[in-house]
Image (cartoon, rainbow, N blue to C red; front, side, top):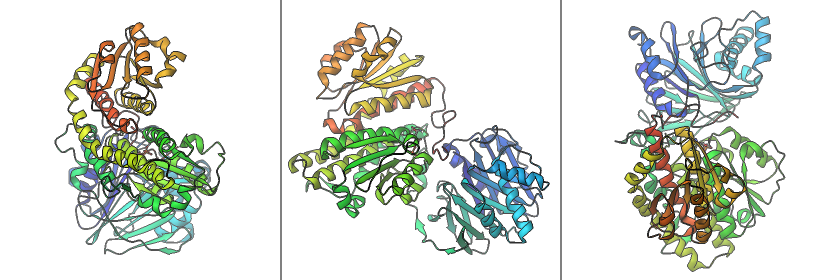
Length: 612
Ligand code: AGP
Protein backbone atom coordinates (compact mmCIF):
# COMPACT_ATOMS: atom_id res chain seq x y z
CA UNK A 1 0.00 0.00 0.00
CA UNK A 2 1.20 3.59 0.46
CA UNK A 3 4.93 4.10 0.71
CA UNK A 4 6.88 6.63 2.73
CA UNK A 5 10.42 7.86 2.29
CA UNK A 6 12.15 10.79 3.99
CA UNK A 7 15.64 12.12 4.47
CA UNK A 8 17.53 14.73 6.49
CA UNK A 9 21.29 15.16 6.22
CA UNK A 10 23.93 16.58 3.90
CA UNK A 11 23.06 14.92 0.57
CA UNK A 12 20.78 16.30 -2.08
CA UNK A 13 17.44 14.85 -1.08
CA UNK A 14 15.56 14.68 -4.38
CA UNK A 15 17.46 11.72 -5.93
CA UNK A 16 17.18 9.84 -2.62
CA UNK A 17 13.42 10.37 -2.56
CA UNK A 18 12.86 9.39 -6.19
CA UNK A 19 15.00 6.26 -5.91
CA UNK A 20 13.28 5.41 -2.64
CA UNK A 21 9.83 5.83 -4.19
CA UNK A 22 10.84 3.54 -7.04
CA UNK A 23 11.98 0.94 -4.54
CA UNK A 24 8.58 1.24 -2.86
CA UNK A 25 6.63 0.90 -6.12
CA UNK A 26 6.11 -2.81 -5.43
CA UNK A 27 3.80 -1.95 -2.55
CA UNK A 28 1.16 -0.75 -5.03
CA UNK A 29 0.11 2.91 -5.56
CA UNK A 30 -1.74 5.24 -7.84
CA UNK A 31 -0.09 8.63 -7.30
CA UNK A 32 3.21 9.95 -6.01
CA UNK A 33 4.67 13.15 -4.60
CA UNK A 34 7.62 14.80 -2.92
CA UNK A 35 8.11 17.83 -0.67
CA UNK A 36 11.50 19.54 -0.66
CA UNK A 37 12.47 22.02 2.05
CA UNK A 38 15.15 24.69 1.60
CA UNK A 39 14.28 28.32 2.15
CA UNK A 40 10.89 27.45 0.73
CA UNK A 41 8.66 24.39 0.95
CA UNK A 42 8.05 23.02 -2.53
CA UNK A 43 5.65 20.21 -3.30
CA UNK A 44 5.37 18.21 -6.53
CA UNK A 45 2.68 15.56 -6.82
CA UNK A 46 1.05 13.66 -9.61
CA UNK A 47 -1.43 10.87 -10.26
CA UNK A 48 0.20 7.90 -11.96
CA UNK A 49 3.67 6.48 -11.64
CA UNK A 50 6.83 7.92 -10.10
CA UNK A 51 8.07 8.42 -13.67
CA UNK A 52 5.09 10.79 -14.24
CA UNK A 53 6.06 12.72 -11.12
CA UNK A 54 9.64 13.10 -12.33
CA UNK A 55 8.37 14.84 -15.48
CA UNK A 56 6.81 17.73 -13.52
CA UNK A 57 9.71 18.43 -11.16
CA UNK A 58 11.61 21.63 -11.82
CA UNK A 59 15.22 20.44 -12.09
CA UNK A 60 16.48 23.82 -10.89
CA UNK A 61 14.68 23.49 -7.58
CA UNK A 62 16.00 20.23 -6.23
CA UNK A 63 18.95 21.40 -4.11
CA UNK A 64 17.29 20.73 -0.73
CA UNK A 65 18.87 18.35 1.82
CA UNK A 66 15.66 17.59 3.70
CA UNK A 67 12.48 16.23 2.18
CA UNK A 68 9.75 13.63 2.12
CA UNK A 69 8.21 11.46 -0.60
CA UNK A 70 5.10 9.33 -0.85
CA UNK A 71 3.35 6.79 -3.05
CA UNK A 72 -0.39 6.82 -2.39
CA UNK A 73 -2.84 3.92 -2.69
CA UNK A 74 -6.17 5.70 -2.65
CA UNK A 75 -8.52 5.24 0.30
CA UNK A 76 -10.19 8.64 0.90
CA UNK A 77 -10.79 10.32 -2.43
CA UNK A 78 -9.91 9.49 -6.01
CA UNK A 79 -6.35 8.84 -7.11
CA UNK A 80 -5.76 12.29 -8.64
CA UNK A 81 -3.15 15.08 -8.34
CA UNK A 82 -5.15 16.91 -5.68
CA UNK A 83 -5.40 13.95 -3.35
CA UNK A 84 -1.80 12.84 -3.82
CA UNK A 85 0.58 13.41 -0.89
CA UNK A 86 2.32 15.45 0.51
CA UNK A 87 -0.37 17.78 1.85
CA UNK A 88 0.31 21.25 3.18
CA UNK A 89 -1.31 22.82 6.22
CA UNK A 90 -3.42 25.96 5.89
CA UNK A 91 -0.50 28.29 6.64
CA UNK A 92 1.65 26.48 4.08
CA UNK A 93 4.30 25.86 6.74
CA UNK A 94 3.80 22.13 7.37
CA UNK A 95 3.88 19.31 4.83
CA UNK A 96 2.81 15.80 5.73
CA UNK A 97 2.89 12.32 4.19
CA UNK A 98 0.67 9.67 5.69
CA UNK A 99 0.01 5.94 5.41
CA UNK A 100 -3.13 4.54 7.04
CA UNK A 101 -6.60 5.85 7.73
CA UNK A 102 -7.86 8.45 10.20
CA UNK A 103 -11.26 7.05 11.06
CA UNK A 104 -12.66 10.12 12.85
CA UNK A 105 -11.43 12.57 10.24
CA UNK A 106 -14.93 13.78 9.34
CA UNK A 107 -15.71 15.15 12.82
CA UNK A 108 -12.24 16.71 13.13
CA UNK A 109 -12.66 18.28 9.69
CA UNK A 110 -16.03 19.78 10.64
CA UNK A 111 -14.51 21.28 13.79
CA UNK A 112 -11.55 22.72 11.86
CA UNK A 113 -13.90 24.15 9.23
CA UNK A 114 -15.74 26.00 12.01
CA UNK A 115 -12.39 27.49 12.95
CA UNK A 116 -11.82 28.78 9.44
CA UNK A 117 -9.82 25.98 7.82
CA UNK A 118 -10.49 25.23 4.19
CA UNK A 119 -9.56 22.00 2.46
CA UNK A 120 -8.18 21.39 -0.99
CA UNK A 121 -8.37 17.60 -1.14
CA UNK A 122 -10.74 14.80 -0.10
CA UNK A 123 -8.17 13.19 2.16
CA UNK A 124 -8.07 12.43 5.86
CA UNK A 125 -4.38 13.38 5.69
CA UNK A 126 -5.05 17.04 4.99
CA UNK A 127 -7.33 17.05 8.02
CA UNK A 128 -4.54 15.63 10.18
CA UNK A 129 -1.93 18.18 9.13
CA UNK A 130 -4.34 21.00 9.86
CA UNK A 131 -5.23 19.52 13.23
CA UNK A 132 -1.51 19.50 14.08
CA UNK A 133 -1.19 23.09 12.94
CA UNK A 134 -4.21 24.11 15.01
CA UNK A 135 -2.73 22.45 18.12
CA UNK A 136 0.60 24.19 17.48
CA UNK A 137 -1.18 27.54 17.30
CA UNK A 138 -3.50 27.13 20.26
CA UNK A 139 -0.97 25.45 22.57
CA UNK A 140 2.02 27.56 21.44
CA UNK A 141 4.11 24.43 21.40
CA UNK A 142 6.80 22.68 19.36
CA UNK A 143 5.90 20.59 16.32
CA UNK A 144 6.65 17.25 17.99
CA UNK A 145 4.49 18.18 20.97
CA UNK A 146 1.69 19.28 18.69
CA UNK A 147 1.95 15.99 16.79
CA UNK A 148 1.70 14.05 20.03
CA UNK A 149 -1.31 16.03 21.27
CA UNK A 150 -3.07 15.81 17.90
CA UNK A 151 -2.49 12.08 17.63
CA UNK A 152 -4.15 11.60 21.00
CA UNK A 153 -7.34 12.92 19.38
CA UNK A 154 -7.11 10.65 16.39
CA UNK A 155 -8.74 7.25 15.91
CA UNK A 156 -7.20 5.03 13.27
CA UNK A 157 -3.88 3.93 11.89
CA UNK A 158 -1.03 6.05 10.67
CA UNK A 159 2.57 6.42 9.80
CA UNK A 160 3.33 10.09 9.24
CA UNK A 161 6.36 12.23 8.48
CA UNK A 162 6.20 16.03 8.70
CA UNK A 163 8.34 18.86 7.36
CA UNK A 164 8.23 22.30 8.96
CA UNK A 165 9.20 25.42 7.03
CA UNK A 166 10.08 27.10 10.34
CA UNK A 167 12.62 24.40 11.17
CA UNK A 168 14.50 23.03 8.16
CA UNK A 169 16.80 21.08 10.49
CA UNK A 170 14.22 18.63 11.75
CA UNK A 171 11.91 15.82 10.62
CA UNK A 172 9.11 14.65 12.90
CA UNK A 173 7.47 11.25 12.41
CA UNK A 174 5.03 8.99 14.24
CA UNK A 175 3.36 5.63 13.82
CA UNK A 176 0.43 3.55 14.94
CA UNK A 177 -0.45 0.38 13.09
CA UNK A 178 1.55 1.28 10.00
CA UNK A 179 5.29 0.63 9.89
CA UNK A 180 8.18 3.10 9.90
CA UNK A 181 11.88 2.25 9.79
CA UNK A 182 14.56 4.82 10.55
CA UNK A 183 17.94 4.42 8.87
CA UNK A 184 20.77 5.84 10.93
CA UNK A 185 23.79 7.12 9.03
CA UNK A 186 26.65 9.49 9.89
CA UNK A 187 24.91 12.81 10.50
CA UNK A 188 22.00 11.79 8.34
CA UNK A 189 18.71 9.97 8.80
CA UNK A 190 16.49 8.09 6.41
CA UNK A 191 12.93 7.15 7.16
CA UNK A 192 10.73 4.80 5.18
CA UNK A 193 7.80 2.44 5.43
CA UNK A 194 10.18 -0.48 4.91
CA UNK A 195 13.92 -0.85 4.64
CA UNK A 196 14.13 -1.12 0.83
CA UNK A 197 14.83 2.61 0.22
CA UNK A 198 17.35 2.65 3.09
CA UNK A 199 19.58 -0.41 2.53
CA UNK A 200 21.69 1.34 -0.11
CA UNK A 201 22.86 3.95 2.41
CA UNK A 202 22.99 2.25 5.80
CA UNK A 203 22.33 -1.12 7.41
CA UNK A 204 21.68 0.42 10.83
CA UNK A 205 18.02 0.84 11.56
CA UNK A 206 15.50 1.41 14.32
CA UNK A 207 11.89 0.25 14.01
CA UNK A 208 9.51 2.81 15.46
CA UNK A 209 7.00 1.36 17.90
CA UNK A 210 3.27 1.96 17.80
CA UNK A 211 2.12 5.24 19.36
CA UNK A 212 5.58 6.76 19.22
CA UNK A 213 6.83 10.07 17.90
CA UNK A 214 10.42 10.45 16.73
CA UNK A 215 12.35 13.66 16.16
CA UNK A 216 15.30 13.49 13.74
CA UNK A 217 17.67 16.48 13.84
CA UNK A 218 20.21 17.43 11.23
CA UNK A 219 23.00 17.47 13.84
CA UNK A 220 22.57 13.69 14.24
CA UNK A 221 20.53 13.86 17.47
CA UNK A 222 17.29 11.92 17.64
CA UNK A 223 14.80 11.00 20.31
CA UNK A 224 11.58 9.08 20.78
CA UNK A 225 8.54 9.79 22.95
CA UNK A 226 5.33 7.89 23.28
CA UNK A 227 1.95 9.58 23.00
CA UNK A 228 1.92 9.98 26.78
CA UNK A 229 5.15 12.08 26.45
CA UNK A 230 7.37 9.43 28.05
CA UNK A 231 10.85 9.20 26.58
CA UNK A 232 11.62 5.84 24.90
CA UNK A 233 14.80 4.21 23.74
CA UNK A 234 15.53 1.72 20.98
CA UNK A 235 18.39 -0.56 20.14
CA UNK A 236 19.88 -0.07 16.72
CA UNK A 237 19.40 -3.20 14.61
CA UNK A 238 21.31 -4.45 11.61
CA UNK A 239 19.52 -5.16 8.35
CA UNK A 240 20.15 -8.71 7.24
CA UNK A 241 19.50 -8.41 3.52
CA UNK A 242 21.66 -6.89 0.81
CA UNK A 243 20.94 -4.49 -2.03
CA UNK A 244 21.10 -7.32 -4.61
CA UNK A 245 18.11 -9.02 -3.02
CA UNK A 246 15.88 -6.06 -3.90
CA UNK A 247 17.13 -5.74 -7.48
CA UNK A 248 16.11 -7.87 -10.45
CA UNK A 249 19.55 -9.46 -10.91
CA UNK A 250 19.18 -10.24 -14.61
CA UNK A 251 15.56 -11.44 -14.45
CA UNK A 252 12.93 -9.60 -16.40
CA UNK A 253 10.57 -9.38 -13.43
CA UNK A 254 10.82 -9.67 -9.67
CA UNK A 255 8.16 -12.37 -9.71
CA UNK A 256 10.22 -14.60 -11.98
CA UNK A 257 13.35 -13.96 -9.93
CA UNK A 258 11.46 -14.86 -6.76
CA UNK A 259 10.05 -18.05 -8.29
CA UNK A 260 13.61 -19.07 -9.17
CA UNK A 261 14.86 -18.09 -5.71
CA UNK A 262 12.68 -20.72 -4.04
CA UNK A 263 15.31 -23.45 -3.67
CA UNK A 264 17.61 -21.02 -1.86
CA UNK A 265 14.77 -19.45 0.12
CA UNK A 266 13.72 -22.87 1.42
CA UNK A 267 17.32 -23.73 2.31
CA UNK A 268 17.56 -20.44 4.21
CA UNK A 269 14.31 -21.16 6.02
CA UNK A 270 15.59 -24.56 7.17
CA UNK A 271 19.18 -23.58 7.99
CA UNK A 272 20.16 -24.23 11.61
CA UNK A 273 16.67 -25.41 12.46
CA UNK A 274 16.95 -29.11 11.63
CA UNK A 275 19.47 -31.84 11.06
CA UNK A 276 18.33 -34.79 9.03
CA UNK A 277 21.31 -37.01 9.88
CA UNK A 278 20.82 -36.49 13.59
CA UNK A 279 17.05 -36.36 13.32
CA UNK A 280 16.42 -33.14 15.22
CA UNK A 281 14.25 -30.09 14.61
CA UNK A 282 14.72 -27.01 16.70
CA UNK A 283 12.66 -23.88 16.19
CA UNK A 284 13.72 -21.28 18.73
CA UNK A 285 10.21 -19.84 18.79
CA UNK A 286 8.73 -23.25 19.69
CA UNK A 287 11.37 -24.05 22.34
CA UNK A 288 10.66 -20.88 24.25
CA UNK A 289 6.99 -21.79 24.78
CA UNK A 290 7.23 -25.54 24.35
CA UNK A 291 5.01 -26.39 27.34
CA UNK A 292 2.10 -24.36 26.06
CA UNK A 293 2.64 -25.48 22.48
CA UNK A 294 3.03 -29.16 23.32
CA UNK A 295 -0.09 -29.11 25.47
CA UNK A 296 -2.19 -26.93 23.19
CA UNK A 297 -5.82 -28.06 22.94
CA UNK A 298 -5.95 -26.80 19.40
CA UNK A 299 -4.23 -24.53 16.92
CA UNK A 300 -5.98 -21.75 15.09
CA UNK A 301 -4.20 -20.52 12.02
CA UNK A 302 -5.15 -17.06 10.87
CA UNK A 303 -3.96 -15.19 7.79
CA UNK A 304 -5.08 -13.63 4.50
CA UNK A 305 -4.63 -14.50 0.83
CA UNK A 306 -1.65 -16.65 -0.04
CA UNK A 307 -0.65 -16.87 3.62
CA UNK A 308 -4.09 -18.32 4.35
CA UNK A 309 -3.43 -20.96 1.70
CA UNK A 310 -0.17 -21.95 3.37
CA UNK A 311 -2.16 -22.03 6.63
CA UNK A 312 -4.46 -24.65 5.09
CA UNK A 313 -1.42 -26.78 4.34
CA UNK A 314 -0.36 -26.18 7.96
CA UNK A 315 -3.71 -27.61 9.06
CA UNK A 316 -3.13 -30.80 7.09
CA UNK A 317 0.43 -31.06 8.42
CA UNK A 318 -0.27 -30.45 12.12
CA UNK A 319 -3.34 -32.67 12.26
CA UNK A 320 -1.68 -35.39 10.22
CA UNK A 321 1.70 -35.46 11.97
CA UNK A 322 1.06 -34.16 15.49
CA UNK A 323 -2.60 -35.16 15.89
CA UNK A 324 -3.81 -31.85 17.32
CA UNK A 325 -7.00 -30.21 16.00
CA UNK A 326 -6.42 -27.19 13.78
CA UNK A 327 -8.79 -24.53 12.46
CA UNK A 328 -7.85 -22.14 9.70
CA UNK A 329 -9.52 -18.75 9.68
CA UNK A 330 -9.49 -15.77 7.37
CA UNK A 331 -8.21 -13.04 9.66
CA UNK A 332 -10.84 -10.64 8.33
CA UNK A 333 -13.65 -12.97 9.45
CA UNK A 334 -12.02 -14.13 12.66
CA UNK A 335 -11.61 -10.60 14.00
CA UNK A 336 -15.31 -9.77 13.69
CA UNK A 337 -17.04 -13.00 14.59
CA UNK A 338 -16.54 -13.07 18.34
CA UNK A 339 -14.40 -16.24 18.27
CA UNK A 340 -14.25 -18.62 21.22
CA UNK A 341 -10.67 -18.75 22.47
CA UNK A 342 -9.01 -19.82 25.66
CA UNK A 343 -5.63 -20.17 27.29
CA UNK A 344 -5.04 -23.64 25.84
CA UNK A 345 -5.26 -22.32 22.27
CA UNK A 346 -2.28 -21.45 20.16
CA UNK A 347 -2.92 -18.99 17.34
CA UNK A 348 -0.49 -19.16 14.43
CA UNK A 349 -0.56 -15.88 12.51
CA UNK A 350 1.04 -16.15 9.08
CA UNK A 351 2.09 -13.15 7.03
CA UNK A 352 4.74 -12.31 4.47
CA UNK A 353 4.73 -8.58 5.15
CA UNK A 354 3.99 -8.78 8.85
CA UNK A 355 1.80 -5.69 8.38
CA UNK A 356 -1.56 -7.04 7.20
CA UNK A 357 -4.18 -5.05 9.11
CA UNK A 358 -6.71 -7.88 9.42
CA UNK A 359 -4.11 -10.36 10.67
CA UNK A 360 -2.84 -7.83 13.20
CA UNK A 361 -6.37 -7.23 14.44
CA UNK A 362 -6.99 -10.98 14.72
CA UNK A 363 -3.84 -11.25 16.86
CA UNK A 364 -5.03 -8.52 19.19
CA UNK A 365 -8.35 -10.30 19.73
CA UNK A 366 -6.65 -13.64 20.35
CA UNK A 367 -4.24 -12.01 22.80
CA UNK A 368 -7.07 -10.38 24.72
CA UNK A 369 -8.59 -13.86 25.06
CA UNK A 370 -5.39 -15.34 26.47
CA UNK A 371 -4.29 -17.44 23.48
CA UNK A 372 -0.58 -17.81 22.76
CA UNK A 373 0.37 -16.12 19.49
CA UNK A 374 2.95 -17.69 17.21
CA UNK A 375 3.90 -15.43 14.29
CA UNK A 376 5.24 -16.90 11.06
CA UNK A 377 6.48 -13.89 9.11
CA UNK A 378 9.00 -12.91 6.51
CA UNK A 379 9.74 -9.23 7.13
CA UNK A 380 12.03 -8.92 10.11
CA UNK A 381 10.98 -6.32 12.67
CA UNK A 382 7.52 -5.92 11.16
CA UNK A 383 4.39 -5.44 13.27
CA UNK A 384 3.10 -9.04 13.43
CA UNK A 385 6.26 -10.61 14.90
CA UNK A 386 6.36 -7.71 17.35
CA UNK A 387 2.76 -8.30 18.35
CA UNK A 388 3.27 -12.08 18.72
CA UNK A 389 4.46 -13.82 21.89
CA UNK A 390 6.85 -15.95 19.88
CA UNK A 391 7.35 -17.19 16.35
CA UNK A 392 9.66 -17.94 13.47
CA UNK A 393 10.87 -15.85 10.58
CA UNK A 394 10.63 -17.55 7.20
CA UNK A 395 13.88 -15.97 5.91
CA UNK A 396 12.67 -15.86 2.31
CA UNK A 397 14.42 -12.51 1.80
CA UNK A 398 12.62 -9.44 0.45
CA UNK A 399 9.67 -10.33 -1.77
CA UNK A 400 9.02 -7.47 -4.17
CA UNK A 401 6.58 -9.00 -6.69
CA UNK A 402 3.04 -8.37 -5.47
CA UNK A 403 2.14 -12.00 -6.19
CA UNK A 404 3.57 -14.02 -3.36
CA UNK A 405 5.76 -16.95 -4.43
CA UNK A 406 8.82 -17.66 -2.32
CA UNK A 407 7.01 -16.33 0.74
CA UNK A 408 4.42 -19.09 0.26
CA UNK A 409 6.93 -21.90 -0.10
CA UNK A 410 8.95 -20.79 2.92
CA UNK A 411 5.78 -20.48 4.99
CA UNK A 412 5.02 -24.08 4.03
CA UNK A 413 8.56 -25.20 4.92
CA UNK A 414 8.26 -23.48 8.31
CA UNK A 415 4.88 -25.08 9.00
CA UNK A 416 6.38 -28.43 8.04
CA UNK A 417 9.14 -27.94 10.60
CA UNK A 418 6.61 -26.86 13.22
CA UNK A 419 4.48 -29.94 12.61
CA UNK A 420 7.51 -32.24 12.70
CA UNK A 421 8.88 -30.70 15.90
CA UNK A 422 5.46 -30.98 17.48
CA UNK A 423 5.17 -34.61 16.37
CA UNK A 424 8.60 -35.24 17.86
CA UNK A 425 7.83 -33.73 21.28
CA UNK A 426 4.40 -35.32 21.43
CA UNK A 427 5.69 -38.68 20.25
CA UNK A 428 3.02 -39.01 17.59
CA UNK A 429 5.43 -40.29 14.94
CA UNK A 430 8.23 -42.83 14.98
CA UNK A 431 11.68 -41.25 15.05
CA UNK A 432 12.64 -43.14 11.90
CA UNK A 433 9.72 -41.61 9.99
CA UNK A 434 10.60 -38.10 11.18
CA UNK A 435 14.19 -38.64 10.08
CA UNK A 436 13.03 -39.88 6.67
CA UNK A 437 10.90 -36.77 6.18
CA UNK A 438 13.74 -34.48 7.24
CA UNK A 439 16.01 -36.13 4.66
CA UNK A 440 13.35 -35.58 2.03
CA UNK A 441 12.84 -31.98 3.15
CA UNK A 442 16.54 -31.40 2.54
CA UNK A 443 16.09 -32.80 -0.99
CA UNK A 444 13.28 -30.36 -1.80
CA UNK A 445 15.45 -27.45 -3.05
CA UNK A 446 17.13 -29.75 -5.61
CA UNK A 447 13.72 -31.08 -6.68
CA UNK A 448 12.43 -27.52 -7.12
CA UNK A 449 15.48 -26.84 -9.34
CA UNK A 450 14.43 -29.84 -11.46
CA UNK A 451 10.89 -28.49 -11.60
CA UNK A 452 12.12 -25.03 -12.64
CA UNK A 453 13.85 -26.70 -15.59
CA UNK A 454 10.36 -27.46 -16.93
CA UNK A 455 9.86 -23.76 -17.60
CA UNK A 456 9.93 -24.13 -21.45
CA UNK A 457 7.24 -26.85 -21.29
CA UNK A 458 5.07 -24.64 -19.08
CA UNK A 459 5.62 -21.62 -21.32
CA UNK A 460 4.43 -23.64 -24.29
CA UNK A 461 1.26 -24.65 -22.41
CA UNK A 462 0.74 -20.99 -21.39
CA UNK A 463 0.82 -19.94 -25.06
CA UNK A 464 -2.12 -22.27 -25.78
CA UNK A 465 -4.35 -20.94 -22.99
CA UNK A 466 -3.38 -17.29 -22.74
CA UNK A 467 -6.73 -16.22 -24.19
CA UNK A 468 -8.89 -18.37 -21.92
CA UNK A 469 -11.46 -16.48 -19.89
CA UNK A 470 -11.81 -19.03 -17.09
CA UNK A 471 -9.65 -21.66 -15.44
CA UNK A 472 -10.36 -24.39 -12.90
CA UNK A 473 -7.70 -25.75 -10.54
CA UNK A 474 -8.39 -29.06 -8.83
CA UNK A 475 -6.45 -30.97 -6.21
CA UNK A 476 -7.05 -33.26 -3.25
CA UNK A 477 -5.54 -33.49 0.22
CA UNK A 478 -2.28 -31.56 0.50
CA UNK A 479 -2.74 -30.40 -3.07
CA UNK A 480 -6.15 -28.81 -2.51
CA UNK A 481 -4.64 -25.63 -0.99
CA UNK A 482 -2.14 -25.64 -3.87
CA UNK A 483 -5.10 -25.56 -6.29
CA UNK A 484 -6.43 -22.49 -4.45
CA UNK A 485 -3.04 -20.82 -4.56
CA UNK A 486 -2.54 -21.63 -8.26
CA UNK A 487 -5.92 -20.06 -9.06
CA UNK A 488 -5.11 -16.97 -6.98
CA UNK A 489 -1.77 -16.54 -8.78
CA UNK A 490 -3.46 -16.66 -12.17
CA UNK A 491 -6.27 -14.26 -11.34
CA UNK A 492 -4.15 -11.66 -9.58
CA UNK A 493 -1.57 -11.22 -12.32
CA UNK A 494 -3.37 -12.17 -15.56
CA UNK A 495 -6.92 -11.05 -14.62
CA UNK A 496 -8.32 -14.36 -15.88
CA UNK A 497 -11.12 -15.67 -13.70
CA UNK A 498 -9.87 -18.81 -11.95
CA UNK A 499 -11.26 -21.00 -9.18
CA UNK A 500 -9.61 -23.63 -7.05
CA UNK A 501 -11.63 -26.58 -5.69
CA UNK A 502 -11.08 -29.87 -3.95
CA UNK A 503 -11.24 -32.19 -6.97
CA UNK A 504 -14.13 -34.20 -5.53
CA UNK A 505 -16.23 -31.06 -5.08
CA UNK A 506 -16.28 -30.58 -8.83
CA UNK A 507 -19.36 -32.70 -9.30
CA UNK A 508 -21.25 -30.66 -6.72
CA UNK A 509 -21.38 -27.64 -9.01
CA UNK A 510 -18.32 -26.53 -10.98
CA UNK A 511 -18.70 -29.46 -13.37
CA UNK A 512 -21.49 -27.45 -14.99
CA UNK A 513 -18.83 -25.05 -16.26
CA UNK A 514 -16.87 -27.64 -18.15
CA UNK A 515 -16.92 -27.59 -21.92
CA UNK A 516 -14.29 -27.55 -24.64
CA UNK A 517 -13.26 -24.00 -23.70
CA UNK A 518 -12.50 -24.69 -20.04
CA UNK A 519 -8.88 -25.39 -19.11
CA UNK A 520 -8.71 -27.52 -15.95
CA UNK A 521 -5.42 -27.78 -14.08
CA UNK A 522 -5.18 -31.00 -12.08
CA UNK A 523 -2.71 -31.55 -9.29
CA UNK A 524 -2.38 -35.28 -9.66
CA UNK A 525 0.73 -36.22 -7.73
CA UNK A 526 -0.94 -37.43 -4.54
CA UNK A 527 -0.09 -40.99 -3.82
CA UNK A 528 -2.99 -41.69 -1.48
CA UNK A 529 -5.72 -40.11 -3.60
CA UNK A 530 -4.25 -40.90 -7.01
CA UNK A 531 -7.01 -43.28 -8.14
CA UNK A 532 -9.65 -40.77 -7.15
CA UNK A 533 -7.90 -38.01 -9.06
CA UNK A 534 -7.76 -40.24 -12.13
CA UNK A 535 -11.56 -40.56 -11.93
CA UNK A 536 -11.92 -36.78 -11.66
CA UNK A 537 -9.68 -36.34 -14.70
CA UNK A 538 -11.90 -38.77 -16.59
CA UNK A 539 -15.00 -36.81 -15.61
CA UNK A 540 -13.52 -33.65 -17.12
CA UNK A 541 -12.33 -35.48 -20.22
CA UNK A 542 -15.80 -36.89 -20.78
CA UNK A 543 -17.09 -33.30 -20.97
CA UNK A 544 -14.34 -32.20 -23.34
CA UNK A 545 -12.57 -29.94 -20.84
CA UNK A 546 -8.92 -29.18 -21.61
CA UNK A 547 -6.73 -31.01 -19.10
CA UNK A 548 -3.39 -29.74 -17.87
CA UNK A 549 -2.09 -32.20 -15.28
CA UNK A 550 0.80 -31.86 -12.88
CA UNK A 551 1.93 -35.45 -12.34
CA UNK A 552 4.91 -37.30 -10.99
CA UNK A 553 7.64 -38.30 -13.40
CA UNK A 554 6.85 -41.55 -15.14
CA UNK A 555 3.08 -41.30 -14.68
CA UNK A 556 1.33 -43.56 -17.15
CA UNK A 557 -2.40 -43.25 -16.45
CA UNK A 558 -3.04 -39.53 -16.55
CA UNK A 559 -0.66 -39.06 -19.47
CA UNK A 560 -3.26 -40.89 -21.61
CA UNK A 561 -6.12 -38.71 -20.45
CA UNK A 562 -4.59 -35.24 -20.30
CA UNK A 563 -4.02 -32.71 -23.07
CA UNK A 564 -0.79 -31.61 -21.40
CA UNK A 565 1.29 -33.04 -18.60
CA UNK A 566 3.90 -31.40 -16.44
CA UNK A 567 6.07 -34.13 -14.92
CA UNK A 568 7.54 -33.08 -11.58
CA UNK A 569 9.89 -35.09 -9.35
CA UNK A 570 8.27 -37.34 -6.78
CA UNK A 571 8.48 -36.53 -3.07
CA UNK A 572 6.75 -37.46 0.20
CA UNK A 573 3.05 -36.62 -0.04
CA UNK A 574 3.18 -34.15 2.85
CA UNK A 575 5.93 -32.20 1.07
CA UNK A 576 4.32 -32.27 -2.37
CA UNK A 577 2.92 -28.67 -2.20
CA UNK A 578 6.50 -27.38 -2.17
CA UNK A 579 6.97 -28.90 -5.62
CA UNK A 580 3.52 -28.72 -7.21
CA UNK A 581 3.10 -24.99 -6.61
CA UNK A 582 6.10 -24.17 -8.80
CA UNK A 583 4.58 -25.07 -12.23
CA UNK A 584 1.42 -23.16 -11.26
CA UNK A 585 3.43 -20.05 -10.44
CA UNK A 586 5.25 -20.32 -13.78
CA UNK A 587 2.01 -20.95 -15.69
CA UNK A 588 0.42 -17.82 -14.19
CA UNK A 589 3.57 -15.81 -14.86
CA UNK A 590 3.84 -16.76 -18.55
CA UNK A 591 0.13 -16.31 -19.24
CA UNK A 592 0.23 -12.85 -17.63
CA UNK A 593 3.29 -11.83 -19.65
CA UNK A 594 1.69 -13.09 -22.88
CA UNK A 595 -1.41 -11.01 -22.09
CA UNK A 596 0.77 -7.91 -21.61
CA UNK A 597 0.06 -7.59 -17.88
CA UNK A 598 2.29 -5.90 -15.34
CA UNK A 599 3.11 -8.99 -13.27
CA UNK A 600 5.09 -7.22 -10.56
CA UNK A 601 2.48 -4.54 -9.94
CA UNK A 602 -0.91 -5.91 -10.95
CA UNK A 603 -3.80 -3.47 -11.12
CA UNK A 604 -5.58 -2.58 -7.87
CA UNK A 605 -3.33 -4.77 -5.71
CA UNK A 606 -1.01 -3.74 -2.92
CA UNK A 607 1.87 -5.77 -1.54
CA UNK A 608 1.00 -5.23 2.06
CA UNK A 609 -2.61 -4.56 2.89
CA UNK A 610 -2.37 -2.21 5.83
CA UNK A 611 -6.03 -1.17 5.80
CA UNK A 612 -9.03 -3.41 6.30
C1 AGP B 1 -0.48 -12.92 -2.59
O1 AGP B 1 -0.11 -13.21 -3.89
C2 AGP B 1 -1.37 -11.80 -2.44
N1 AGP B 1 -0.91 -10.65 -3.11
C3 AGP B 1 -2.07 -11.59 -1.11
O2 AGP B 1 -3.11 -12.52 -1.12
C4 AGP B 1 -1.29 -11.73 0.20
O3 AGP B 1 -0.88 -13.05 0.39
C5 AGP B 1 -2.19 -11.27 1.38
O4 AGP B 1 -2.51 -9.92 1.19
C6 AGP B 1 -1.54 -11.49 2.72
O5 AGP B 1 -0.38 -10.75 2.86
P1 AGP B 1 0.66 -11.06 3.99
O6 AGP B 1 1.18 -12.42 3.78
O7 AGP B 1 1.72 -10.01 3.82
O8 AGP B 1 -0.06 -10.96 5.30
